Amino acid sequence: MPTSQKSLRYKLSSKSLKHKSSSGRISKPKQAIQRKKLTISLTHANALHPLNTNPLNESEYFEDICYYMHLMEMQTLGDLALIDSQPELDWRMRSYLIDFLIEVHSHARLRPETLYLAVNIIDRYVSRRVVLKKHYQLVGCAALWIAAKFEDAKHAIPCLSDLVVSCCGIYDESAFIQMESHVLSTLGWVLGHPTAESWLRIYTLALGTDDIQTQHIARCVMELSLYRREFIHIPSSAIAAGSLLLGRTISGRVRRMPDEDEQSVKVAEMLDEFLGEHLDQISEIISAKYAPYYYSRASVVIKEWYLAGKRFYFYSPTMSPSFAHSTPPPTPPFSVDSDHVYSPGSMSSDDDAPLTPYSQPAAIPLVAKENKEQVKQRPSMQTFPSLGISNKAV
Image (cartoon, rainbow, N blue to C red; front, side):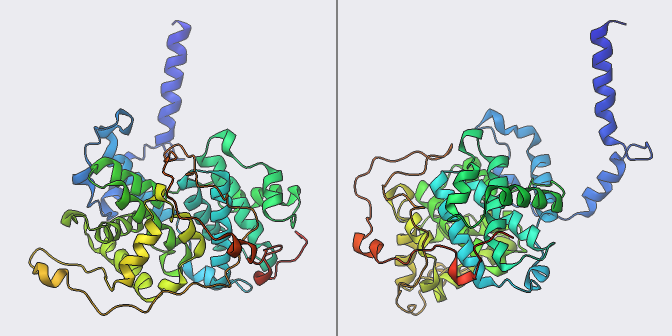
């Protein structure tokens, strides 16, 4: 037999071993049974299939891809009860950590998926290990570093010196390397979490019916879910669908009834409840990030919409349009929290859009500028003071 045929035969035989169990039996029938038992909501499948707008989307494998993504997102969720049992961490610290990660993420111009994967890594790690308060920021930076290596191009990955500077020298380079190794070993090197950004990209690119403002508003409200405890156990596909549903409502676009399943409506109602009743608690980091015109002034549009007393309502096809679009009493006026902590120098003062593989800067001169006097009055965050992080990494 020629050598080429031997090598080909070896490759085929070795590939077939992946579908066999430890006993040598083929496990395809077992996989089929598990797949039949697993109930997965694919409400968007009919609308998205086939994905023939891009040859790389491989429309013939779309159903299998969606099934695998749903399976992985359920296997890679954080455990809310175990996170609550952390002795030194509370949910107030999470807000400061997410603010910090968003600033570092924006400054490094990483892909949007990287931020969501980093937060997922943090949630899964905190669900399995006891994390001290002084190491919380170190875990966050290590998670962002791991996520960047998994999602971003090699030239965009932050180097160790950048991480040391972003933490104001609290930890040395060896601390990041040790924490990276510990996080990966704790998670069993499983990093294939389908992020909410990935699902939102599938929904918007496949349908092609949502304009850029709707997408930006959906991304803004979806990013707010990273701060909230109640979204930890919700699948990322439902968060993306609910954010897109709320984004369509805020932007005044036509809502698609086939997309409004029970989970997406529940997520939209949860986000609407937070924005309608706690508008003054929105992170200023998020507000500043989505205020420029290259993000369609998404944060400004959201605040104006809720300050006008508008709210999200779920309506069925049998509900009268007048009731569906009725307006409740106005919400309390928005007030800015002046005690919010910023990281010095981590956000660029220019008005260029983040250069990611999927976003290009828009040359629009009319962009909301921040008052320089307010910038000077900001308290500098040297060592994460509100969290009590010490000056030593160990």
